[in-house]
Length: 144
Image (cartoon, rainbow, N blue to C red):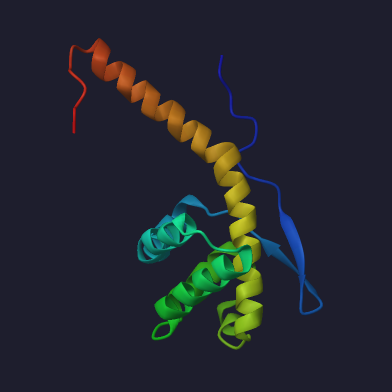
C-alpha cells in the first residue's frame, strides 16, 4: 500500500526585523500567483543561468530582471510574499527593497528544496504513469 506521511512541509523561521517570520511552501491555493510571477520571469532567468557569469554577476542579472518586472507593479511581489510568508500585506507594502529581496531569497530557498525533493519526483512519477497508460491503451506516443 502506498501512503503519504506528510502533507505539509516543515515550518521554516527566519529573523526579520527582530521578529520570527514563517517562510511557507507554496500551497495549492497560491499556484496562480506563483505561476504568474514564474511566467514573467522563468524564461529570462533560465537564459541568464545559461550565460557564463560569475555568481555575483548572475545574482545581479537576476535582480535586474526582478526589478524590471516589478518596477511598474509591485502588487504581484506583495501578493507572492504575503502567501509565502506570514508577513501582512500592509507591512510588505512599506518594507525596503533590501527587506523584500531578503524575503524572496528565503522563500525561493525553502520552496526550491521542497520542489526538488518532494514535488519534482512525484511529477516525474505521474508523467511516467501517463506514458505507460498511453502505451498500454494502444495509443501511440506523440512524436512532437
